[in-house]
Length: 258
Image (tube, rainbow, N blue to C red):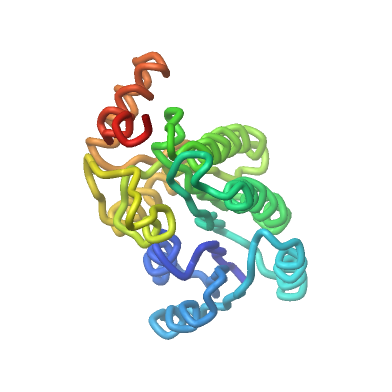
């Protein structure tokens, strides 16, 4: 049985991935997320059977359930897409340290565990897609921990692609710019916003479509949009101190945090 596995499948970019691979010929799609009601609703929308796991990937027991399901089903994972993750915006003392550590647990540790639990069940020609961010291209004050986790995801994924070359398993890292999802509902407090100026706001459908195309082509990194590519080139040419200063001034955070 050939399957695709998507974490963070209940909403945002993860949900969009599930919808776009619905006609890709998988015997099943396995969706992993916290919200069982949203997963059940998604299941009703698909042509492909969705087997879902309503679980928390920061809890060890979730991986035992997942691996047992792989063993018992005899499934081969042709595509793994790691979308689970969240961000919190604000100064370090505005975000409880427990939330910052939970960000690291989900965005980094759970992604590594999900990936390395799944690899033994992936045949030659399989693909892994991991979601990083343009935030991985620079240090970002007041989006500090989130951006740092995305640096980890990017470089872990790029190096893993070399390690998996002999097994003919491709790894593509997706680095989206601002994308229209419910990510911001959790990231920002409505009354105390960090981000007040968005250079662009892309549609998740377009970001995902480009990511799947790039993964099929074996690209190491997938970016969507001219403004995304322009930003990455721009930040790559400047000293990190200058990049942080520009960001703080752009969002008027120098006035907010004196």
